[in-house]
Length: 189
Image (cartoon, rainbow, N blue to C red; front, side, top):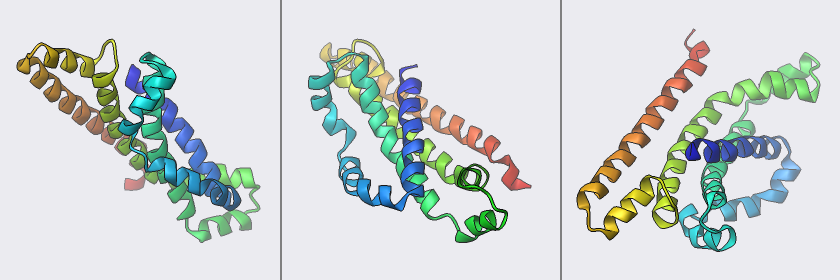
């Protein structure tokens, strides 16, 4: 549940931000330097700062995982909008679509494949960051289980945690690929 809520929050914010900056060259020019600098900071490097600011409660984990997913999704949506073929928008203009209609009927459907790819990548990154955050500061979770086992020299429990982390990551990726294939089934026709 922790992963779903944190990842969902970051992904929705990333989609909204990516659309805004992708559709507005002025906003893109204004926000690009800050976005690029913040995007380059590894989420794990922010853990000590976020612990100081938010403590080790749920807020810390929400912010760190949302940060991990936000930038990946925002970048993929932004690039998908910017790389949209001009002829798509020309057709919308010929059909006399309003700006909102063009976004809803042309831009959004056209960027779905790239957006889904970005969301799938963000899901994997979010899972890694969540386990890392739980290793360092959590009261429960898979990362906390591995940290407690490490402190008690229980290599067997640590290895179970490592294997579980990999299996959950694989299940998340495969599950999202199936969802992606189902959502994109219209392309096969």
